[in-house]
Amino acid sequence: MTDQPSTKDIRVATLVDPRGMKKVSLADWSTRGDKIFENKKDAKASLDADAQAINTLQDALFASKVGSLLIVLQGIDTSGKDGVTKEAFHYTSPLGVLVHAFGKPTEEELAHDYLWRLHKVTPRKGYITVFNRSQYEDVLVVKLRKLAPAEAVEQRYEQINQFEKTLVENGTRVLKLMLHISKDEQGERLRERLEVPEKRWKFNPGDIEDRKLWDDYQAAYETVLQRCSTPWAPWHVVPADSRSRRDAIAARLIRAELEAMKPEYPDPGYRLDQYEID
Ligand code: ADP
Image (cartoon, rainbow, N blue to C red):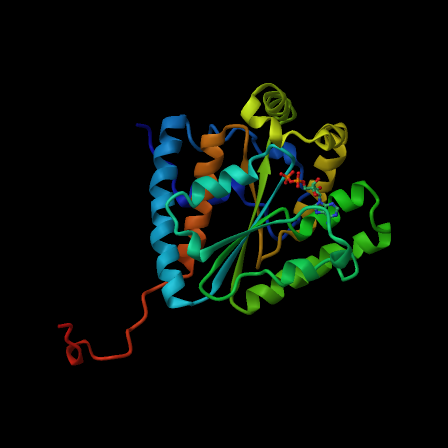
């Protein structure tokens, strides 16, 4: 086995500088991740250890209620948002983890401000919530499909930053992962969806339409990374061409976030010697 990357290595390789001084270009981030994990066997071993640690940390978080964690997963179709969720929480009790997938807004949602549907399902203390797509769709698909006026979209970057700041200042940590896949790999995965019977249900003709807008999506993501990587909620770009490396990198970042919360089992609040079980 080769040397496993440290958490710091993984952070540095994926972090988008929150000061946002430099022009963000997705070409600066690998989609392969083979510099982080040289081989897939190491990635799998790392994922397994981190998924077990996430289980232990989640249990303590649930008991301690020191705060909550919101994981925001974004990425183009087939980038693996479902896969990351499944693998990182492989060992974790479903009792303390909630997943919300955001599709096209309903009539009721559209009748409110765009953050309404998100804010009402942010995690309560002790919980972890995963957003599979998120507030960022409102500056991605909405921008490219012109579903809201350009001026409204322009205001949203700062509104989202302030929304996330409000969450962080009130005890919810926000971990944002952009799953970064290459166009070739996406082509492979879409083909697979058409060819493999068990995967066909995942195929959506709309994905082909979005693929035609590949360059526009990349540019829209770059704007998101540039304008919404903040000191309180920075973005991480996770290489997503290899499933095992992607999951291992995401799991390490999730584990590190939970460790930083220092969840500890609370004092029971009673004297153990007062009780006897007959
Ligand atoms: P997924 O592709 O994530 O597996 P779906 O097939 O249900 O799930 O697709 C969800 C769709 O909803 C995506 O095409 C996405 O762009 C769209 N969507 C999400 N949020 C919004 C939004 N705020 N406005 C319009 N469309 C949205």
